[in-house]
Image 1 (cartoon, rainbow, N blue to C red):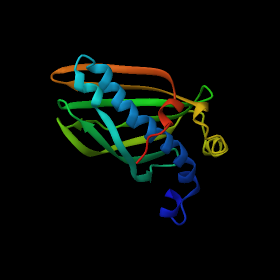
Image 2: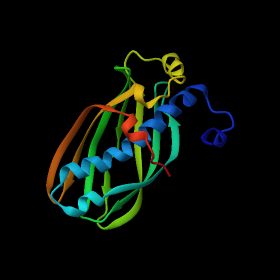
Image 3: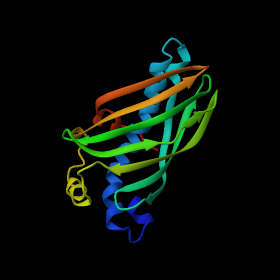
Image 4: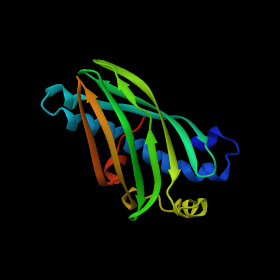
Length: 177
């Protein structure tokens, strides 16, 4: 469906699309996981969730990077919070593939809103467009893991949360628009 939007997408953009789709799924669920870890003592914190996500735009940024905007629907029955310093790396069979970062996002208290989250994905050092095109054949989420860290601030308290070697397969099951 996404390919129908663009009649003639440039080849290097097409190679990034599967990676962006995987990052969208993992990233939105990771935001929920971060908040749950920050305030597990609050009963309603477990109700925070991602209702939907959609790719708003993908724009090339040179030959090794793309910028993307993802619309993320977040259900938040609790207090306001902010997620900043979001960054990480996606690995394919243990080798770095893509480094990513996202702009901060402020989630309103007691809301069901859609937030446009901007981010950038850049090919990891030593990875070329040709390497990435070869990986299009292996879109199995079990072949991918990622490291990610983010800082969550809520009610004057901040905590940086990092996760390493997270299997992407655990984030790609089920969710969507």
